[in-house]
View 1 (cartoon, rainbow, N blue to C red):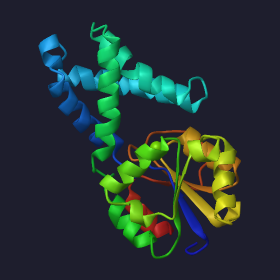
View 2: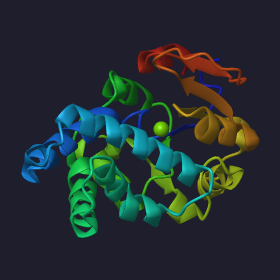
View 3: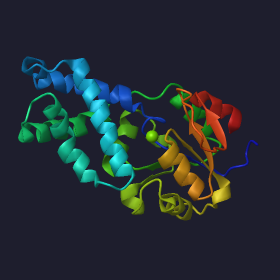
Length: 231
Ligand SMILES: [Mg+2]
């Protein structure tokens, strides 16, 4: 199976860049800076609320129900509302600070760097992401992985977002690749795996919690280190 592929596509958030850890660190700092505990908001509750509202909004965005702008403009208003703070201007400022601080955090998913160092000399590597272009570039620079990648294909650039097959086809065309020459690695069964399958790509489902599912995937891994056996 080794050397079957000519290029490898990666998702970024939760697959390489440790969104949970980085986000929590930024939220802790901002929770402190904004004195939220003086307003009766405990940090653990705040992190929980963020996790719940944030994944709801991203799910709505991924399934085409809301534009990206809604995430930025409503996320923290909704989170603060749950803690009985109804201050829209404050929520916008908080949101701006979160969006600028969080991507500067550098935690990666375990073994990400080892695996990228292993794959980089063998395959051109590309990021396929629904995240904002400028934000994703900052994350990759902060965490020291930007140089491993030949291109970063964002939904903004491609004009389509995962799971649309067009974003994968855009990445193939841009790089002169055929679908059967590429494998897509990601943590999301709908956007990464479903989308890549629709574009006829082989897939690696990164499932660190070994969550049960019924999707057919080419390979499934619980650790990024397993990629060394596959590629
Ligand atoms: Mg992801």
